[in-house]
Image (cartoon, rainbow, N blue to C red):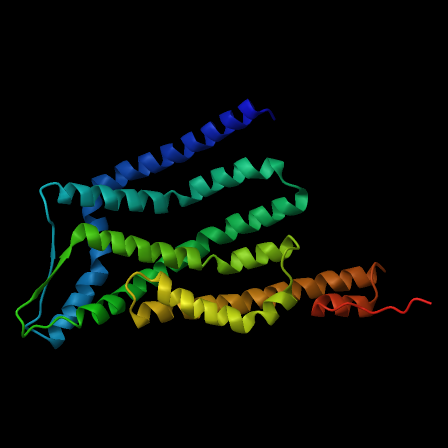
Length: 273
């Protein structure tokens, strides 16, 4: 394909993706009120829990500015449209890349597409379920005796929640990325085993740094699934390599000793006479 053909293909894929997002945006904007209520629910749950423990605490959500309600509706509708349209724009991205891939690379791309969507959505759901406890922890520091009101701007709150959900969603793509690299031959299971301790430490550091709220509940809710998914990815890669090495032994391509050395990441020393 010439450069102009590629540009036309990109334009077509972008148009299809944008049409899907715009259509869903219009639908979401019409029904924006339930979406805003869904977004605010974790904060309201946390505020009710804090108020039950400390009735004198003044906690309230506010809109600052004349245009804030409209901006909130636009943001909420845009967020809902992008999430709802993710199968469409991910497929368009996949359809643009696949023609230039080899057969084995196409299988990897299919795995990424089929696994990335449910894992990303699962991460978003886990992040959403974690929010009430995280907000309760942060709001619990409200000092009622000082007469200070905790006023949360809706637009700022929406930005915070969007960042947290995005971090959780992307983090849940870890097993897909690791298995994909293993299928492409760029990452071996022995490397994952060797780096397991460091990887666990990195997961907890990432959980502490990446969560915008900075509370321990969000950190653990992000770090623990990442550790579990890393170990599961290691097991999947290990099982896949064992099956592949057994097939190579049966075909006579390699010896059992060479297969064991390849699986353990070792080299066989040969004596030259």
